[in-house]
Image (cartoon, rainbow, N blue to C red; front, side, top):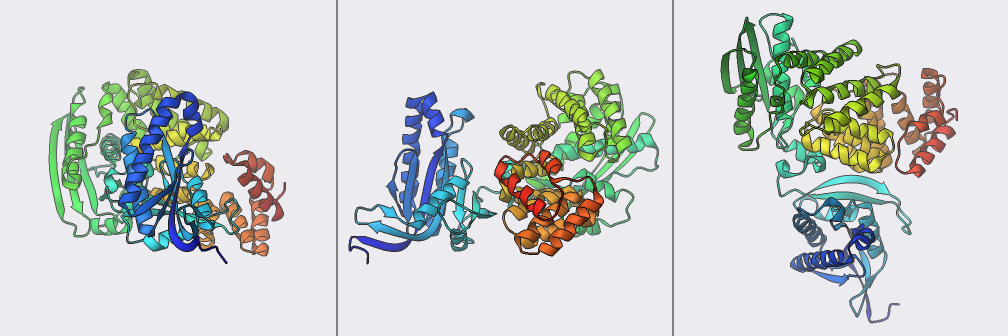
Length: 588
């Protein structure tokens, strides 16, 4: 029986800790102590506002108690928003950022106000799972506040935590009241993405299949696609998916329904001599009604102003119609040399084919762009992408050499004054392969910030999040990538299945891995994920059957050689996977 001065009750507990506090103290004690005092003031103000009570502020931590789970989560959201606002202009390496964990559980409260028990321990473990500046909540808190708090919750699955006998299921909480368009793209969730205005650009039509007309039409479409793709408040379907609609006989309503978008952009391009007529129309996908249309009848000359003018006017018109104010940067204006523009358009035309020989031809055209327009980042950026694509798609006899060349060209692009984010995601992948996880994650987040709707940057960020030990965030990012790219490679599904597997969502992991095998019947990585799922769920027989399939598809497969290619941040995760695959019968 508890002494009378002890009271056991259900309460919401908020636990927080400052990230990198010791490092910051070593660098500048006075500034760090001042920042900590200021942060404690923020905590105390919002805790009290939401009917909570600060229990302890030992060291760099804050522990608070609330009567309701909603009060604790709303306080946490307000605290992080306030701290982030206060940190504006502070260098990243000197910024004091807090992890926050919130749990709903039993606590033992003493007469002096101090609290103890598993509820406190779990809240502390949750804050350790959060990233700096983020909020981790338990499954119990999620159930209590869902629908009652203005936030988006991203399922992170179950995690084993120290001194707690059972795995803890947790969610990342993100403020939603600011609106989807104002959330930094690399922090955007699938729920945010689905709330945005959505559009798809159909391949522009030409009166004939004449190569010169098709190249101009494709170039204009891609200029508009990439300019719109830099608007964070818009969701735009990837150009690769839209290429499947070339010469496809569908109505706007059919295309919109298949793609799940609200708007479609159509274009018709006709070139005769030095004159071009371009008609652009914005269509409501649900009704087929034309919302806006414009005809451009222009003389093409070496100044290249016509292509720039058309792109900018279309982007501005769509901005007004769909967003009312968030302007895209028409980055193509950096390319002024007429011959370089010709090579650029031809390179894009080849790149969109998605084939080995066409990729080589695209790379050659982009090398000419780099030679003729050395002041522009476009040439080096696109050469880097083509080399990376060779390595990624297995189109080269020396992947290591292709990666090396991709890095050289990407670094050249990043050294310039302007860039569009493509070099960033190439370097992010290279950093990951080199096991530089922090650099990979930072570069990938920059790529998504610069290219919010990019069909390459988003899934690559998901892949990096997975290998960095954040499978819940990886799964959410891959769902976004698949929404942006409805027609995608099997590797999207493999990363998503692996992420589901790591957060113990076995049914979804199974279904997603099987979908990867439907897209690519000989996919080995999908089978490896399924083997892990089968062994985790007690289906030993199917695990061994899948292992035999892997050996049949790749007779020289060995777990050790495969492991050498897997850049996990945490060696223990890879060791567990290797042991599981070996136990299923795969060669060591």
